[in-house]
Image 1 (cartoon, rainbow, N blue to C red):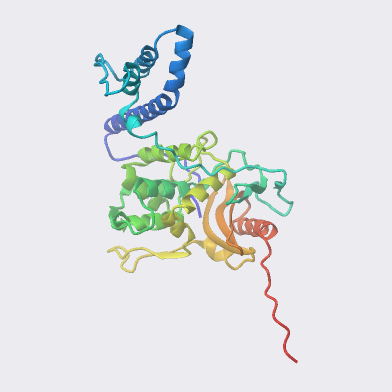
Image 2: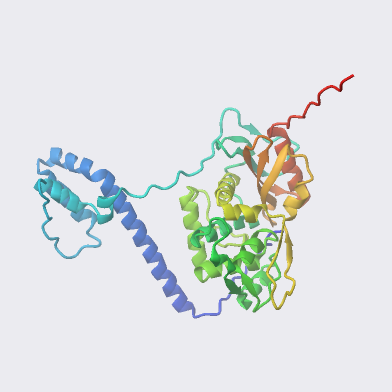
Length: 403
């Protein structure tokens, strides 16, 4: 179902020193971009107020105060003395100086505002799990309000096992700018490498079954990552996007930061292997599932019950993949429909699952459970939670027969 415990590292077939240098350059570029963005936001929002404070405290002109503030903020980048600001017609010297202070992009438009992050919270009505729920960790959330309806150790760190791959496909989709599944990049080919198959074999991972030298489409890699929880597909996707798993992990952890989860979640691999530094909470996983389901293509992947991979020389008829969690729970009475699902398993986490369900009124719910004793018990736990908290479907009343 998910990846098993693994301790050996993937020995990549390239020059280690050159790769380390490339990663260091990338890290520096990312840090510099973050510093520039923070400076732009701080200057745009705070320079006028800062100038006023300096005017009161130091008794100096607004232009001098702001110019001094600008010189301090830009000291890391600017080594040449600045030319005198150009003064527009009808503009005071102080106004011209203040405009010169702001970064060029902020003069034209305010800093780009990020979309609001989906946040979850407990309320006075939040309940604990009943004794019938076996899973050690779990949460059920109203996806419209973010209200936690019930939970157990919902904010306690745990290993997500292959539920990690929810963030893997979301990060890859965002990096490739995939929205609805019609993008041409999904038809690009990726050649499976021996490094990827060896990594999967050594760590006893679940796989799609791609062979060395087989060319899979990017679309195949997305579906292969989720439905059979294929480590070969997840590693192929990471390599296609970033060149290596290590480089892709930078993007995954940046995505955690964007979702507001970086204080409680950190990932070290895109597969879900156990690692002390690879952790999250069931609440955080619910937020990841919500973000993934908000992407139309990721929702298609996470809600697919079956998928047939492309025809290749190695597999002339493709390979039929199944999401067994969805295929098994669809026959249960959940008072609604379980639309999306991703499972996981490592010894330290037991059987896990993250799902998104719809009740009869079209309202969505997020459920994440971990630490169950078997894959079937995991399904039982989620079914019990949905039955208890999703509203009972109304039965249609037939009119009395005419006598």
